[in-house]
Amino acid sequence: MNWRAIWAIMRKDLRVVLQNKGVVLPIILVPVILFVVLPLLVLVLPAAMGSAGAGSNDLQELLAMVSPGLRAQLEGLDANAAGAVFFLVYMLAPLFLIVPLMVANVIAADSFVGEKERKTLEALLYTPTTDGELLTGKLLSAWLPALAVSLLGYGLYSVTANLAAAQLVGRPLFPNLIWTVMVVWVAPAAAAFGLTSMILVSVRAKTFQDAYQTGSLVVLPIVILLLAQAVGVIYFSIWLTLGLGLALWLISLVLLYYGKRTFHRTELIARL
Image (cartoon, rainbow, N blue to C red; front, side):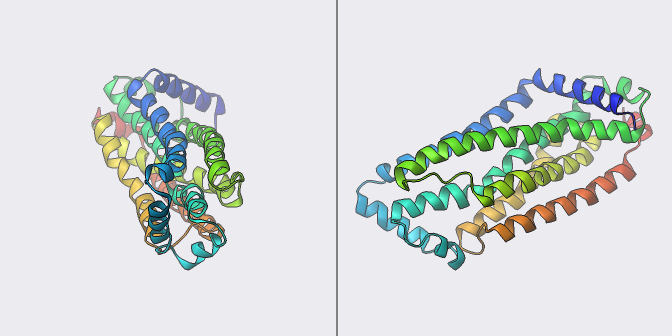
C-alpha cells in the first residue's frame, strides 16, 4: 500500500474541509455547545430553579427515576451535588459520542459527494492509486479529525465540568475511569461507525445535503442510549462503556468489509 499517496489524499481532503464553512461550522459549534454551554448550565440551573426547596424536590424526583445501580453511585450526596454528578458524569456521556459521530459524518459526507459537486471526482478517480488506497485515504481523512476534536473537546469539557463541580460538589469529577474509556475506546469506535456508514451513503448520494441527512440517522442509537438512561433502564457503568465500544468496533469492521468489497472506481466513474 502506497502511504505517500494515501497521505496526499488526506491532505487534499483536509484542505478542502478547512475551506468549507458548511463543514467547519458544525465541527466548531456542536462541541462548544456540548462541552462548554451544557456544563455551565448545570452550574446555573440550581439558582434558576427558584427556591432551594423547590429545586431540591425537583432534583430528587428526577433522581428517583434513575436505575438502582446509578442511584447507588449518588448515595451520600445532597440534591444539588447528586444532580451535578448525574448530569456531568452520566447524562452527558452519550452526548459526548455525538461529537466523533458528527465530525466523521460531516467530513465523510463531503468526501465523495463534495467531489462530485466540485467536479473533481473524475480527476481523483483517474489518479494512479488502487481502490484500497483511495478508500483508506478517504476514511483516515475523516477518522483522524474526529479523534482530534474528541480529545480537544474532552479537555475543554473536563475544565468546564470541573469548574461547575467545584461549586456544587466541592471536588473535581474529571478525569475519571468511565470517561477515559469513552475517549480512548468508544469515541474512536463511534467515529469509525459514523464514517464507514457515511462512506457507503456518500458514494451513492447525489448532493452533500442528501448524504449528510441520510447519514445523520446513525445518531439515533445515541439518542436511544440517552433516553434509556434518563428513564432508569441503564446507566453508563464501566462495563456498559466497554461493551458499547466493542459493539461499535464490530459493526464498523462489518461495514468496512462490505465497503471494501463494493467500492470500485469504475462504478463511481459510471455515475458521473
